[in-house]
Length: 129
Image (cartoon, rainbow, N blue to C red; front, side, top):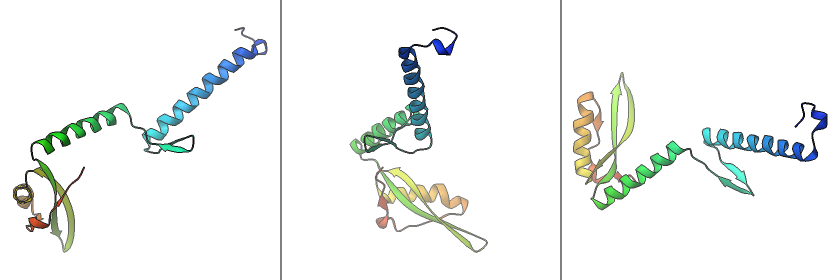
């Protein structure tokens, strides 16, 4: 290609336009992925993830499968704390074999710091995730 832009052939102009357009599309895809927004293509929305998130999802799937195969479940345990008459309610997820054990783990881990653990473990919900 000559230094003078006026001497570019139609083929060179086309290739340059495709290269610039491709870069803009890639930048848009990367931006949408980084802010957690979907990409629209042919009237459909697609959510993308980077390599790190993909690996985290794979590891979570492996962990979930192992837990199911070995009887380990996750339970949502309600806890609360009162500070200066202001009550704060939270939920923690405890991974164990049954709801009663989840309650005992939560009591051991949180009550020493002032949190009150809901001891009605028969109403704990199993976390699906």
